[in-house]
Picture 1: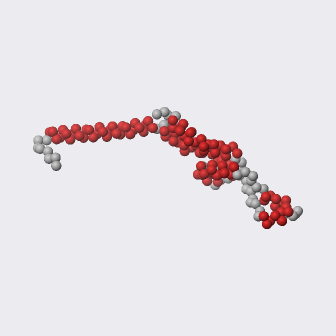
Picture 2: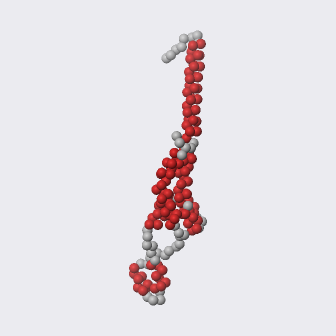
Picture 3: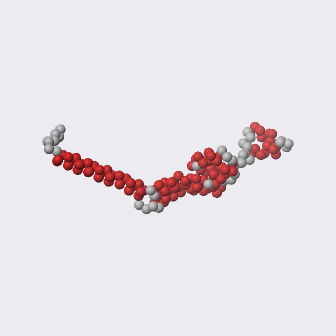
Length: 157
């Protein structure tokens, strides 16, 4: 038994989750609302001079799917925290995404601290077993003493 073994195991298991959440924490930006893409049949309205500039806003598309995929994975890992953050404001969600490495580490670190309780729990279990064995032997000695002191024959069956 080594006290740091629990934390070492936790850190080894956390590496993939920490990599994903660190990427999100570094690359995240405040969430802004963006409008959807207009259908293709609306292209003629975009080409007209008086409305084209206003409708060109709708054609801005995200060029990368990497960050949204990482965001989905990280939000699955920290769903309870993100669900609470969504109730408040976009800035709270932004900071929750920035803190995802810490939030992902909370439950596994509890395992590491629980591992520190191992010797104490082992002593408790072994003490309970020893007390049970001692009580059983004491009862057997007492029963044997009563049998040997009795003057009548004992019926076994």
